[in-house]
Image (tube, rainbow, N blue to C red; front, side, top):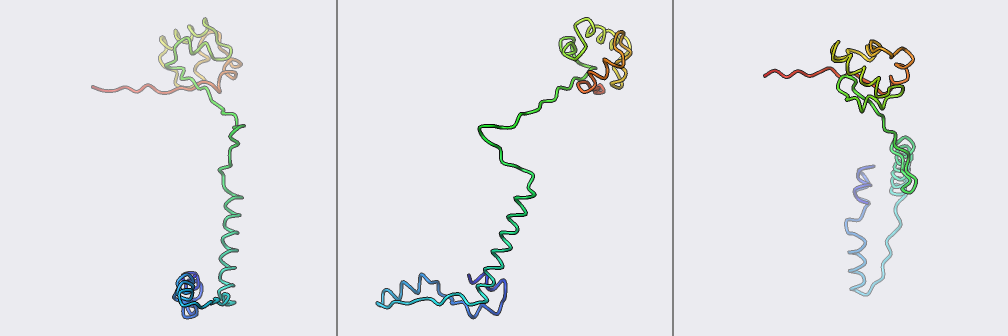
Length: 153
């Protein structure tokens, strides 16, 4: 209480008793007297109300705009896993998982990659016989090209 009153208005320091209510009550009970502390002054009440309103407003704003929502433990949201395949390093078994690509087309991709070198962009896969614009559009969300990393010795 002393800290709050001094922080809001320094002149209140002299109005706040230095002894805690516990010390006063304990010494009064030891002497057989019964004491009652006076209620907080209007300035102290105003300071407490101001701090309470500021704290509640801050909490409300934080809860309203916080991006982290609580997750229901028993009904968690579905996890979306994105499948992305590097067409320059994928083996035929992985390439055949792409839409519109079977084992035969996967082997053609490997042959084209070996003959022409790595694909520089996703659009270069149209150089593979049998893959046109429609097939490319079907598998575009699932493929990417990663340039080869050459290490020098």
